[in-house]
Length: 116
Image (cartoon, rainbow, N blue to C red):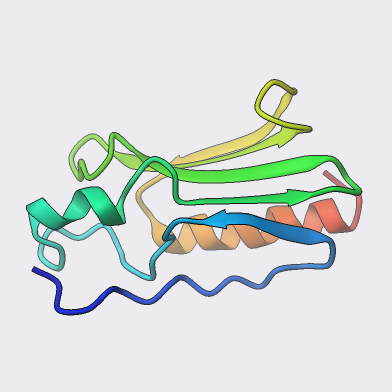
């Protein structure tokens, strides 16, 4: 069992982005040696973080599916125009938290600069 709630993952957020919800994108890697199996579901869950850029009409959403499953699961990062019914602009599926974070920050920067 984890003794304390893990720290939230810091992000470099560019101009114009709004945090719609942060339900726990934690600064933890997918590592079965660090996180007991019975704790994974609340850390690596489907609804983790969502941000939007009103001016550029973009939404970024991050989740982990299947929840808590380190064998089959991965982070799902998606960006849509408008909302989830709009066109899918970009997506990434990975277990690599560092790649996830660098991609989120790159996408935010590209959207802010009106290149994506």
